[in-house]
Length: 291
Length: 205
Image (cartoon, rainbow over all chains, first blue to last red; front, side):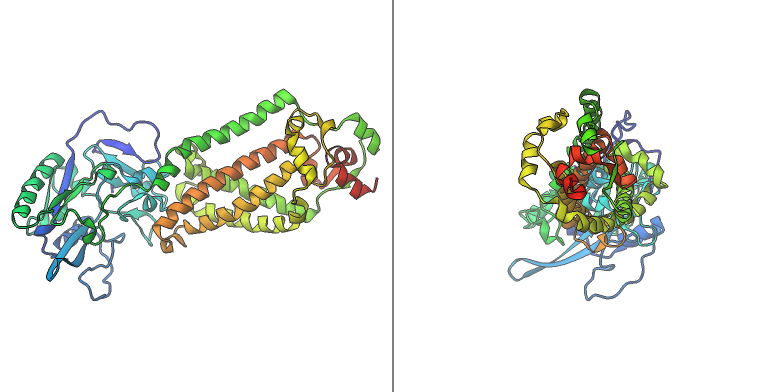
């Protein structure tokens, strides 16, 4: 749910500028995967704060629980067992959820004015009261995050606790994380903090440790420190170079105004043709011949 | 006024108008979700969610009745050498220099092109529409396929809307045409002027 008190930089299905004269600090959440122990306290805190209760699911023989993101589970831990080096098993645990892209594909695809907003601080939020349930946000998202509720047919995802952030608190998952694997602050500070962590990891033998802040979507307001920064796919299929699909770009980019213009021109062409050439009428000869 | 001849049966006319009304509703609700400039059209359908709910059902209705109509008119829409000649003289058509035009059967090349445009776009709209139909079918469709579907859906709809604009304009432009689809009849003079081969065939003159 969105908050009116935060300044808005972008609004879905809106062709004029949003109220954005005030500048706000850009915020970010940094998830250090090398520090995560997979306790799922963040999942619990998310449900607690947001008053969500997912159904008790089934055991699928893996640690992932629930199995996937849902309208009730806005974040899930994804466990991957990998052997980057032969004989050295690693358990990579990634907290999955909305990445809060600087160029959000969901917002680009959304046809309902104000159903998706991007605040000046970088948080991308869904206004469910404006959501029409079309699912276009799913086609726009490069990270497969939005979920349509079976109960009310509206789209849901992580809000980055926009309600908490608006009053100067950190997101619930950050507050609860027992190992400090999740930290929150200004985007600048988080990048700086990550640099220190990456240096540390490199010293400990993770030569490819890197910050995940993918430029294909303009950077994100949820970032990861990855031990294997050169292979983000190892982390339960985190995309290496995420970007809005060119099909969505085409559909929501040039075609929207051009096609609308084409329809308008066709109507005017007809009108002016009638005024210029006049109606096509049966001539007297035909009247005579056929009578 | 000259005598009247039958052009469309009652069944043909009713089928046409079901398709036509469904098209107008589908186009208005579809445009509402296509560009923010048209979003206000959702008010005609009871708001955003209702537009999203109704649009696919209207589309299915349109497609089903179109299939019935297409099967009936299929045979009459094969392109003939006279049609090619007519297309070559499209300037004369547009400038009302009808004396330079060849004799035509029940339909001219413009009408036939619209027919085949609909034969192609209607199934495309139906199939891609089902792929993105929330909440019934879309949850079972992979995201990449939904992305392909939305683009094809928008493009097909655009082509169809342009085709129908031309179709409606032609009916207004060519005097004496609308009654063919409202009353089912046209004057013999109209038939002789615009579709002489069909006129000869029908009247034996």
